[in-house]
Image (cartoon, rainbow, N blue to C red; front, side):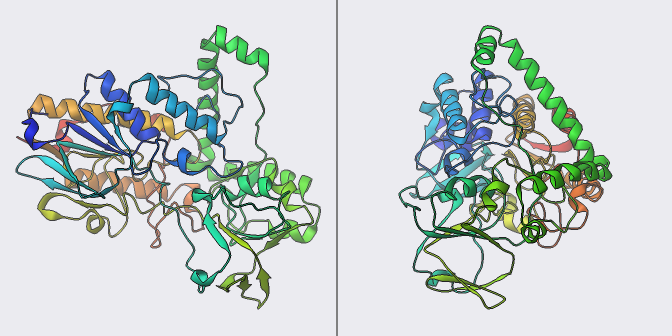
Length: 491
């Protein structure tokens, strides 16, 4: 990466987002000797999804020792599966320890970015109108940052209080209220058990039920924490064990979908243990192969649904009135508060930012048939743009932190390549990206995610844009270092 006069740029590297991807990338840049970088954060605090999702009961569904950086181990997690506040505190710890505060600009939302080919610079425009420039732009926005709201007739006419679970309004007291929850995904199964004892009535509207398994969660015992504090290598061993256990689980998702039938017995046992009403049990039985959509884990979701103040409504919602939800069977369901547990617009990568590459090509135009990137990181026509947690890098069986660390190494390799070639920019070759994504789509067809259901893993047209159809160790091997032959390096 050639030196560019300071007057024409703000820094060497601009990073969008301060979640696990952005913070980890910044730390690795520092470790590699790059100190001239800036992290842009649209909110007033760091943390990404672990800042936004502060709803009651928010927690990780990947074991704590595995859901953390390998280069910054934490031996004093309170639970096997860490709660949101503890994860967010861990991220703030990383900011403090590695001195990232001076590199972070809060309340700096990126509206657009355009590549200046002549200068070899990304020119970034913030919501304030301020413009920044850097040779390298790294997107660390992730896949779960834009809340998805249901398109329901009359939804704007609802007179009660309404909010998305990722924008939880803690000032609203739900005690004694009639609460309607739309959605039964990963967020809903965590907050529903927390609010159920407080509300007068909870109506859960489900489009399709999920497979829910028991969560092997518990507090770490005092002696366990003391032991790991004195012998931190025990945490490393436990992390390795958890990694291998989860990687082996990938067999059922990727190579041998028939293995999911074994896990189905665990689901049936969990459901039957806590749901006494045969009619409700029938409502909670998915009609698609297990694993085709995200498998959820919870110990208190089913017990909460079995309470007298809870009703599960499977009839489709036809419209919303000022004080009720009306379903397709004509029934009115009065409610005071409406909570959207409807997930995220996961296939809208980098939205709503407008990104322009070579020749003014817009990223939305390049991705009009569905997002794709070489190794989930580089996109043809958008030089020196590197995406973390990009297309086809999500997982169904292991920790995304492991995938991110593979991407950190690859991006650092690209920066080294730019310097070694004394290049203004590098652009992945179109045939290279095309061949890679043809293989991705072919392999995706063989996975459990393509066995007959619609999910946020795919676009409306059916293209698989989110999940990695392989093992994490395979991805790490493929991202060890960039190959010069894969890129056009322009001096």
